[in-house]
Structures are given as structure tokens and as C-alpha cells.
Amino acid sequence: MDPILDLREVSKVYGSGETAVQALTGATLQVRAGEVVLVEGPSGSGKTTLLSIMGCLMKPTAGQVMVKGRDIVQLKERDMPQVRAGTFGFIFQGFNLFPALTALENVAVTIRMKDPRARKVHVEAARLLGLVGLGDRMHHLPADLSGGQKQRVAIARALACSPPVILGDEPTAALDSKTGLAVMKLLQSLAREEGRAVVVVTHDHRLEQFSDRVIRVEDGTVLSDRPSLAPEPHGRSGPTNPAVAIRTGLEVGRNERQ
Ligand code: ADP
Ligand code: MG
Image (tube, rainbow, N blue to C red; front, side, top):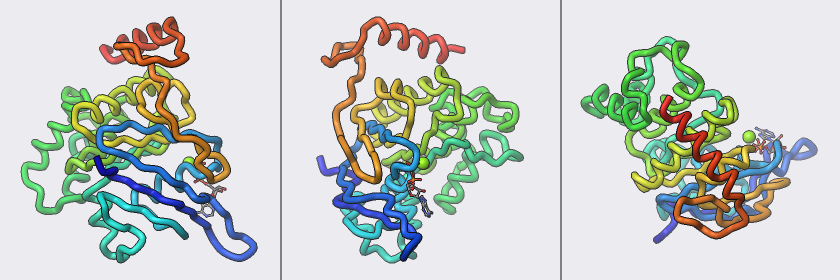
């Protein structure tokens, strides 16, 4: 299967002259439909830069970025928003919900923004909120939702107009660890059930159990790209600790039912 995202030797320099910052150097990676990919690395290592280039929020200084087989570097700036809207849903650490709008309206606004001709916007927004388990909280304002529920609204919003790729920049960082795991599990199930590619930047190693691959970034370089050591129910091999796997699984399950 051809990758949805194909980055080759991608570099990014911010600024110029003496203040130039080499944020990314020669990054090469591919992402395929249905895959959950974690990007980890220390603060300042270039993770957000990498995710922003993947998501066509900016162009690289050098290298090739192919999105669904289309060369983004050659694309005109005015054609970028359309590629972005048709390909990506974004989730951020800070939720970025409109505080005066209900969960339903927050999702509806995004659908209208991405597709001004969309019909039955509220029906679709309600469906997406149902998908993330918030069917009974649709009419709540963000202030009346927990952190985990707010991030679920943000995920529902990222799903607006069915983008094939979901990109999350530390989407669990503002959540307590159990809620963070539950959010990651939800993202994994969306990848599994709806064939979406999910790329998540994180500092939390425990999210690895809900991913397929881990990309390690340091000093702007992709250091490694390896399969996840995920404790799967049907026993994928790897140096995992079964006791920890079982305990974590139970914790997530309990949290999900609350
Ligand atoms: P991470 O997300 O891993 O913390 P970033 O991609 O945000 O890393 O940053 C990588 C490097 O690029 C850092 O040294 C950071 O200070 C620098 N950087 C990020 N954004 C900008 C910018 N807009 N202008 C100048 N330097 C930047
Ligand atoms: Mg960052």
C-alpha cells in the first residue's frame, strides 16, 4: 500500500544568518493508512516542526513531502489550505475549544469551516461526538467538561469531514495519565476501525502500547523508527512485562466506563 505521507530527507531552518535555527535535518519517514505512529524525543528536538511539515502547516527548507502522492513542496501556497482540509485533522495539547460554544457547536463550526457546503452539519457533529463517547454531553460548554471529555470533543472535531490522517501534538500532555491512556486508546480504535493514520507526538512512553511504530527524534534527526513493543491481547512478542500490561489494561478499562 502506498503511504499517505512520504517524507524524504526533510530539513527545516527557521530564520537566517546568525539567528538561523536548524530544527530538522534529513528526516525520512512514511505513514500508511490505519497506522498509529508515535513521535517521541526531548523538548526542542524538532517534533512539532516535523508534525507541522507533515500536516502541511509549513513547507520544509529542503527535501520532499508527498501527501497522498502529491508533491507538497511544489504546491502553490494558495492550494495548501485545500490539501490541509482534505487530508488532516489536528489535535493539540490545549484542546483549543471555543469556550462560548457547546461541544456540538464546536464540532459543527469545524465542519462548516472545512466544508462550507456541508449539509446536516449538526447531525454529523452529533454522530462524531457519539463516536468518541460523548453523545450524552453534546450540549455542554467546555467549562462543564472534564479534561478528558474536552480532548474527546477535540478529537471529534479533528474527525470533521473524515480526514485520512489525524495529527496530535502532545494531545495527552494536559491530561492525567489514566485519561491520557484512554484518549490514546480511542485514537488507536479510530485507526483500527476507520482506517485512519494517526501520528501522535508524546513524552509518555506508556502510550506505546496503543501504537504500531515509534519514531525517535533527537537534535532534529530521526534517530530510530521501529515497531512498537505493544502488549497486544493475542501476544505480540517483545520485552514487555505482562504484569504491567494487564494492570494498565484494567486501569484503562475502568477509566473508560466512568
Ligand atoms: P519540539 O516540538 O520537539 O519541542 P520544535 O519543533 O518546537 O521542537 O523546535 C525545534 C527547534 O526549533 C527548537 O530549537 C526551537 O527553539 C526551534 N524553533 C521552533 N519554532 C521556531 C520558530 N518559529 N522560529 C525559530 N525557531 C524555532
Ligand atoms: Mg513541540
